[in-house]
Length: 286
View 1 (cartoon, rainbow, N blue to C red):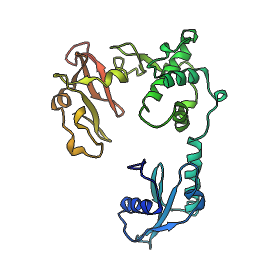
View 2 (tube, one colour; view 1 turned 30 degrees about the vertical axis):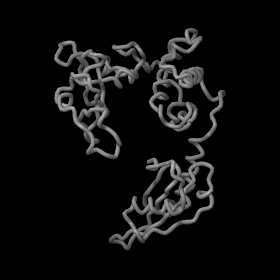
View 3 (cartoon, rainbow, N blue to C red; view 1 turned 60 degrees about the vertical axis):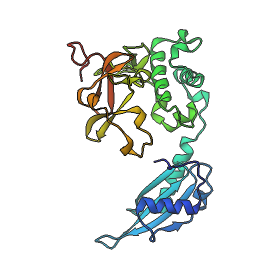
View 4 (cartoon, rainbow, N blue to C red; view 1 turned 135 degrees about the vertical axis):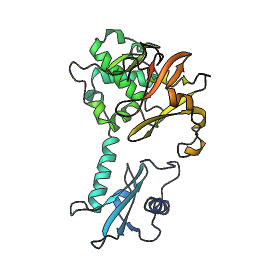
């Protein structure tokens, strides 16, 4: 989890206050000095230990508060020591901040990074991309979609790859990774169950019948869908400010540039927007 305000310098005092908020503890936290953690190049932070009472006499728990977020858990075995927890954190911080060289990347990765750095929405817009074979282009489009979903984060394309090892594994032979958006033709993640799913750019323009922007969310981890007016979302931590679009929540009917579409809960979580009138025999299916 990220820090609530990464622009505020992290000190031992501010880290302790954060740790107290995490654990709802005011007096039982004890700082665990660790020179490597407190002076780390990546993931610098502070560690704390508290003893939590239990039927068997109590157990030690840890809290790490770092420049990138915080972690909280139990020191539940001889191998799960405070030093082991810190070592694991620092190793991960070094890993996700490693330099990825051209020689470690495939042609699909390189062209996807070029498109991302140029701010291009698809591989076909990269000069010379027409010489790339169809399978490489398909996987490169998938990579570009994945990279663009991290827009707004203070990371380069290579840093995004370093944070997401699965994107470096390479394509599976015979697998299809993208399909054309039925509204604008740009690539969208391939989903056989949702052949009319729209791309991220079209999805961002989804509105209600009156043309007011809406955004869909799952209501819980177990499923369900609710639509909110996008201009009322405000601060993510202030749900009281959100205004529900009851009609879209109830019917799923929405619009993209005036064209009918549906907003539904996806089968395995998340929200899917598909082009087509839900009342039409040829409309989207779940």
